[in-house]
Length: 124
Image (cartoon, rainbow, N blue to C red; front, side, top):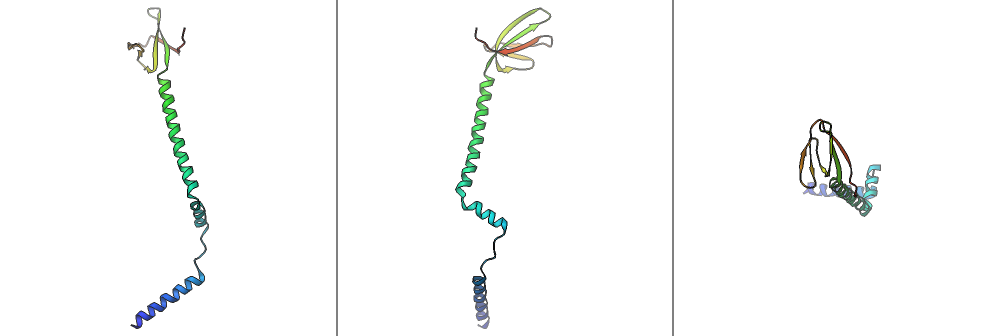
């Protein structure tokens, strides 16, 4: 019984001491964190703004890439052996190192001797 009374008195004394002296002052780091968390709406706006900006940038990059890949260019193939030159309409995405595929679906394989000149499409 005496132990319970002593523990109760010890808790009461500790509580009074805590209430009189209060909490210790927060450190600089804790103050900075407290200031940043006081206005969470501002932080959320910044985070959502960055996310929205990155999504719009990605969509714009994909859109431009798709647009540029589907652009039609004129490819002129010159053969030094046969002394002839032919022109084809080709989408940029269909130009590879050893072959091209025309807009009409014709697949043309290129040799090492042929000279390939690519120019932008012009309506004549």
